[in-house]
Length: 148
Image (cartoon, rainbow, N blue to C red; front, top):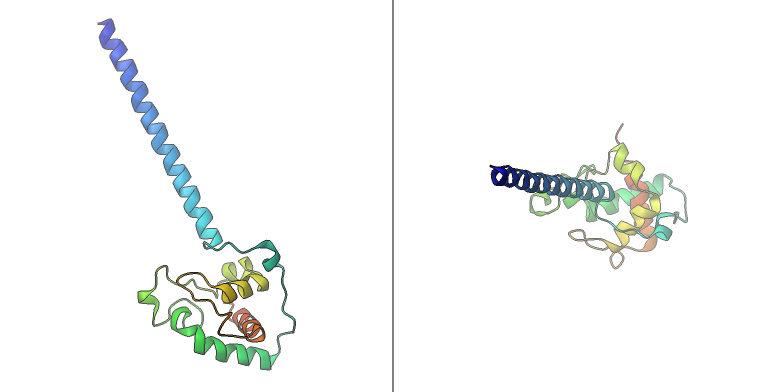
């Protein structure tokens, strides 16, 4: 009888330990997913985040940015930046909706410029395709897409 009680106590400890490990693993996994979601998986250097456009956004700059966006970004990011372009079905992960206040507020102009410049799979880099001024034009245009 004492052996049976000891066996149940040891068994209960093993079950508790396994449950604790499962809960801990779930917590770590969920936390990791949340952090990744917040950061969009991008590792933007701090010095890139504070870079500012060398020129102001005016109608001409925004129009040029819109043309460049339609030519280079629309297929994936969609006509209005919602991440619903015609190529989206083939892209993993799908492009984000860059029109939301959350997306717009989360990224500085320098961060947007960095992402356009260096890219990250599946998004190509545009440093070799667009000039620095053209990339800034796209950033200025993207700011006009903010919803609400």
